[in-house]
Length: 141
Ligand SMILES: [Zn+2]
Image (tube, rainbow, N blue to C red; front, side, top):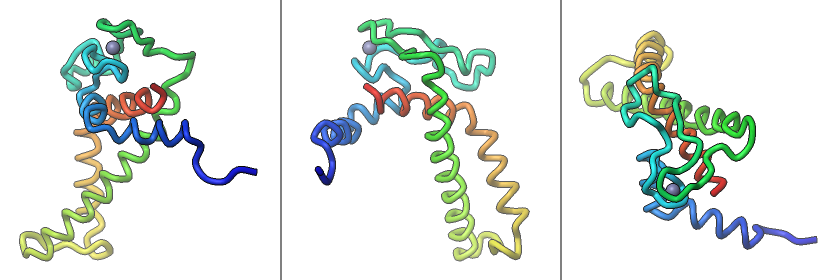
């Protein structure tokens, strides 16, 4: 019985921590070459084309649609990013409160937390959608 992390898994984790690959993920670039774009339109707020992706890399030919339903798993990444956003909103509001800019308490002003969180989530939804797909495909490259 073996314990610990398999060497291949460790190599995958190190690859994910490579800063150039992190930049490729943030910029929605091909996880293989970093040159080709994942999405047809670079502007995520062009809502008609927010979800339009290339099926393969325009530069190296990397397949972006590995199997039917491949991007269903990106919902897990999207969930994690959304939780991180809610935590960031909470920390920011608590900082603003401690600096005296606003009056905020998690239980005394729940509508402030909800309204700021929901507003930011709606505003950032196209970016979160694209980033979650970009991270998901990078995890399997
Ligand atoms: Zn490529």
